[in-house]
Amino acid sequence: MILDVKVEGLFYHSVLHEGREWAHYGRFVALDRPRRIEHTWVSEGTRGLESVVTLTFEPEGNRTRVTLRHAGVPDDDFGRQHREGWTYVLGAIEDRFAKGRR
Image 1 (cartoon, rainbow, N blue to C red):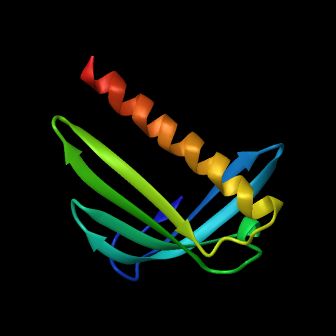
Image 2 (tube, rainbow, N blue to C red):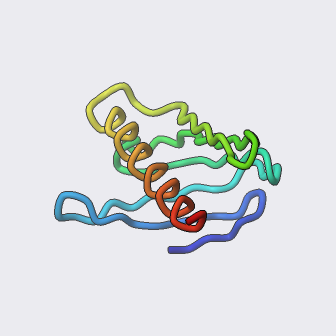
Image 3 (cartoon, one colour):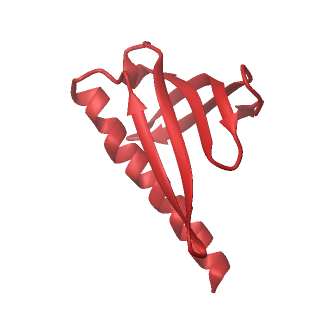
């Protein structure tokens, strides 16, 4: 993983999925801590097109509501698989933080 968390900073990481490596990369567009992160997203799943991921964080009591919007993803099988991927990632993050509350 390469991660330079600043506006215009770049990131790169790869994920092993279904027996092969999938590269993902982009740049940070906005960092409004602690409320919002916005970055571009390019992968084979976007057909090499630059899409935009926006994460917002809203306090709800002692918890945080995380909303993820991924815009500009192609309307095809690869593009639609991003929903499954993001659901998995957000679930893993939720599980990790839930363990810290015990």
